[in-house]
Amino acid sequence: MFKSLGNRITDTKEAVSEYLSFLKQPDFTKAHAHKSYVQKIKPEMHELHLRFSYYFYDRFLPVLYPRHCPICGQVLPYGIYVCKKCAPELPYVREPVCLACGKPVASPEQEYCYDCRIFPKSFRAGLALFVYNEKTRPAMAAFKYMNRRVLSQFFAREICARHKNDILRWKPDLLVPVPIHKNKRRLRGYNHAELLAENLSVLLRIPCQGNLLLRTEDTAPQKQLRPQARLNNLQDAFAVNPIFRDQLADLTTVLLIDDIYTTGATMEICTRILRGAGVKNIFIYSVCIGLARD
Image 1 (cartoon, rainbow, N blue to C red):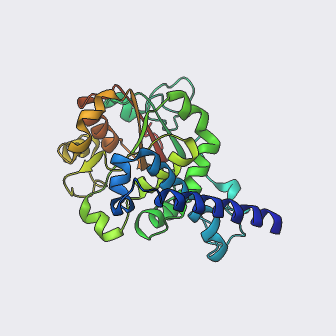
Image 2: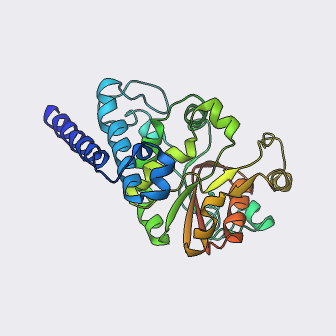
């Protein structure tokens, strides 16, 4: 155990040293400390920034502050992401699933779920990690509202363990998180979908652009709205960041990342915006997804 811990600390030291060596290069000014500059001007620096953050939160910080099980909250030993009791109870999405959104369906003969039959989607295909139920609901709430940012590490690892090959088969040029409005970001301090996308970027070695899409309207909650009403509610709520508009036509495939998929209204609106800006293929991935209504 101590040998493994020593190896992890050594890896972290190497990542820190590499990061600091980049900062000392004469090409950079004080602006290199700003993430927006890194993303737009120095893509290689952006990747290093992400890898450093990943090593810090995944390998170094848990030595000082142990992780808790995302399901029951029990303190975990170093290197463990979910307790032995909860691991077998995790509600992974299993076949058969909807060919469009990835939602579990009743039988292999059923190609599409009710929502995708009634409201056909513009994205090519989608996948999800967990079914959204009483087991996963508290973890998603903690990740989204309670500053449990470290859960992004757990979700990213599980996504790669189950669907890495599927995602790579899609050949995405870029990972794009669904944005939240600046008011919500100011209140929470972070965008949970962006954290997840950044962690996946490191594990999958696919670039991530956290502010390619903007949330332009702080719309009312969607929970009580029917599917068509959700689409109408979000019609003008998103836009492409003008900084990147000219670059979108060069992208062939984008993977949209979000936390929870219910009717798919948010993913659908974001897909339409990206396609309107010139992106040819959009795939989606959600941490949790609801059950089909039929």
